[in-house]
Length: 321
Image (tube, rainbow, N blue to C red; front, side):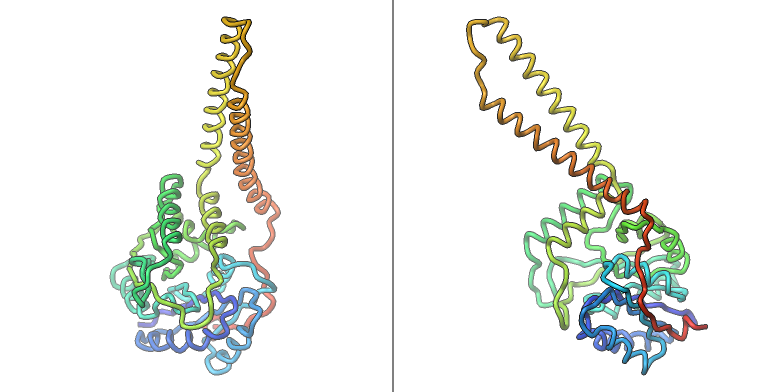
C-alpha cells in the first residue's frame, strides 16, 4: 500500500498532549505500511504547543506545523490543514486523543477496499470509557439541535458525528473550493456529498489537559450551523409576525365593536393590552435578533477577509516533494 496519508491535528493549548498524541497515532500508522504527514495546526495557543511540535519535527520530518498569528478557531484550523495537506487520503483528528487512533486502519480499509470517499466516526451512546453518563442538559441540548437542524436545512447531519473523518483527495478538493468565512464543517462535509460510511466509537476521556468547549461555545456553534444551512428561522419570524398581527387586528375589531354596542361602558382589559404589547415587543426583538444574525454573517462574508493568517510553518517531507 503506497497511499500517502495526511493527518490534520488542530491544536489550542495542547502542549501536554502533543507527544502523547504523536506516539499513539504513530503506533497505528506503522501497522498500515503507509507514508504520512502529521500536520499540527497551532490555533494561537498561549502555552508551549509550538515548542513541542518543533521538537517532534526535529526527530520526524513527516511532522509539519502551521502556526496562526492568533486564535482563529477550530474551523479555520481544519480548513488550513485541508489546504496544506498533500496526501491522497486526509484525516482530521483532535489532539486530545478523544478520537481513537485504532479506527485509522478500518478507515483506510473502507476507502481502499470498499470504495467510500469519506469515512466518518460518530459517538455511540452518551457514556464515556469509564461508564459515566454525559451531563443530562448537554444530552438534551444535543438531541434538540440535531432534530432542529435536520428538519430545517437541506443537509442531514448524523447525530453524534464528529470532525474525525478520513476523506479522499476528491472530497478534500471539493471542501477547499468552499471559501466561505463563516464555516460549519459538519454541514459542509454533508453538503459536498460523496459516498460516506459512518462508523461508531465509544466516548473516550481526555488523557491530559482540559477541554476548551463550554456550553456557550456549543451554543454559538449550533447557532452557526443553523444560520449557515437554513433560512427557516427568518421564515418562522415572518409567520409569527403575521400571526401576531392577525390576532392584534381581531382584538382591535373586538374593541371597536364593543364600544359601538355599549357606548356608555368603558373598554376594560388594560392588563391584557399591556401583556399583548409586551408580547408583541418580544416578538419584534426576537425577529430583529434573527435578522441581525444573518446580516452579521453577510457582513463578515462581503469583507472577504482571509479565513486565517499564518505566522510561521514547518513543512513535512511529503509537502516538500
